[in-house]
Image (tube, rainbow, N blue to C red; front, side, top):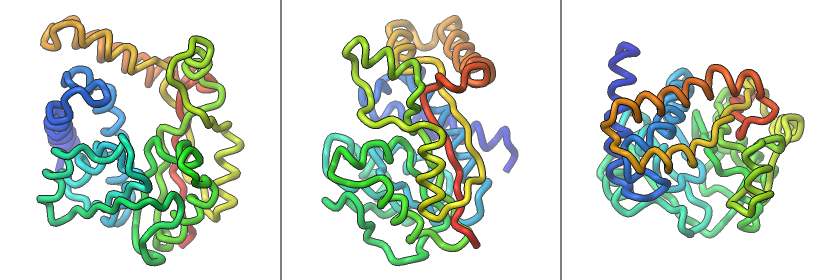
Length: 262
């Protein structure tokens, strides 16, 4: 499948997801979902490049990533350690459950995973690791569990991990807005994954622009407006290709691809 067809397919999949989730995560507008679409495109490109087809979506949240991956051919196992407001949206779960390549586990156990050793080729933690301590878990023990259930040579992708130096987090804390309780420095997260036994294959910081605020602002206007579409893509491009590269220390998130030794 060519890159053009692949990206067009992914866009269609995520547009369907944006419509389906209605107002959850500011996605009652397909345009408002654009920033999420681009992030999932990047995650999809990463997981597609990694060998293996059995994927664990650890801390599946509303089911965004599971929806995208299963719709594009991966055998997805979604896992939520606690039942709270961030479990898979019922309509999304209904559609996912119709796929033979999808399974879902919802437990009250914040650390131990209900899977055998060496069960998966890829595990994805997207905006999850920083929250496990809030539910009585332990991020280091969770990393060890993810190491255990991965096959030799398997990969763990950690994204949306909040950066201690993030200007967005600092501003949110100072103004009393929603912010993360636990943040990570570059050296801290690298030490945690290597202590768990992983080898680091890729690391970067990303996300300088306040995407949620921008998305909410743009949803006030007609999503079919050419200037709105242009502005959305312009801000995303500026963020990814210029701002996050010029000021990585102050970007919002860490991204790591780590591997269990073969």
